[in-house]
Length: 346
Image 1 (cartoon, one colour):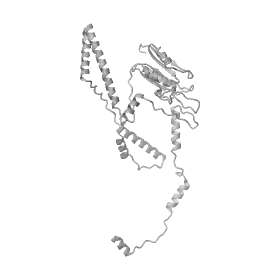
Image 2 (cartoon, helix red, strand yellow):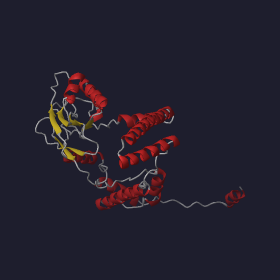
Image 3 (cartoon, one colour):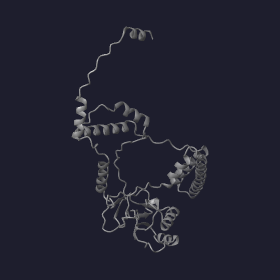
Image 4 (cartoon, one colour):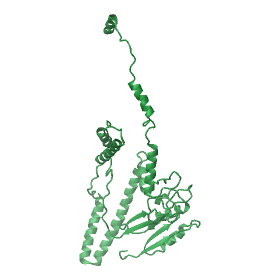
């Protein structure tokens, strides 16, 4: 790929055989160049999207963290057990040491030729321009503004007596929510961030290194090369210490009171939110997007039904009789002069 040798390996460790840390490390170290390993690892861990964790998943997780390996996994389960008492899970994925500039896309085909669904990995060796995805909230949402927009623009005095009127009201309400979300979630600024403010002594050393590099590129003298190497190593060590001290200060600034420590932990771990599987009324699994959409529509239809008395003719007749029933005759009240005077006085 781009004149770089890449080894592609298919993996299937048997579930009954124990996979040790040393065995898997030896397998990875046997690749002398860039590699892509994919298949059914029979390893479960939330890092790549599994619902539960097993011993093999813990072992593979430790290897991935220790050796700084990348994993590529789909967003939906790949293992669909035939036993209705078992939940689907994600067992098929890829691990690789591809460079960061290589773009990948993984897709779960959800075509069951067995109890595993095939996954397709697409690799783009060249940089491609990605189309910007339109979202409902392109930036941080101002919820006070969102609430104010809904309160001021929503119309509650509408008729809901027919299915057409109900559909129009739903469309109007949906459009109002979308517009309120867009108006209250402006897109963040695309301006480039300011340069990192390095201490003066580091900036001075960086300037000296640039001058030394330019001098060596002009002269190609061994003495200039030696000066450049000395400045480069010095700058590398100073920057390493500076970044270490900066990270140490960041760690010390975390507090449990403002939830900053939990936000930082969540960012580092990058655990996926696992969605439970959808099941039909017969306890079968809803696998494809069409099956899931039909299941959700059936659920909404069953739970949001009109009241039983809406089309009850007998109930209509009872109400009409009550409304059309004439009021009983009564003699008008004749107030006395003294009572009027007393009421006016008080």
